[in-house]
Length: 180
Image (tube, rainbow, N blue to C red; front, top):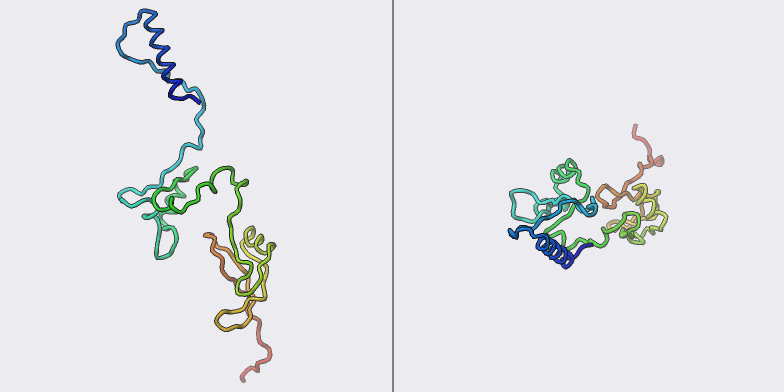
């Protein structure tokens, strides 16, 4: 990598050689535009700063009522299809940029889930299934915080990473008599 000092040395050497050749000193410096090395494509990115607002990009693109990105912002970003997105503003206060550097497959997973949800143990295999398939097996030991009754459900993860419940169809109660 060239340093400022290297540039000054080269400029000085060029000036000396011009003077030695008897060239007129018109104060101009000749610059060779030939690239000395390839520029990484990772340097090019899209800075997502909405036009016409003074707020930082994240502030303007966040829907505080839904606690999620504005849908029009997400769709516009998808249409632009930038290779890399750099966010500024408030997001940079909370974004752990070191977790986003390097090859994705070599970065540590930062997903966190409680070992038990509503007293239902969630083992490593079920957490892995939730991450890879978006849904666990049917878990039968949940205890309702409101009623204290047990229930069965699947844990599911939506596209935003939020975890919720998916309930199996209710079984018919055959003990009740049918009114005639």
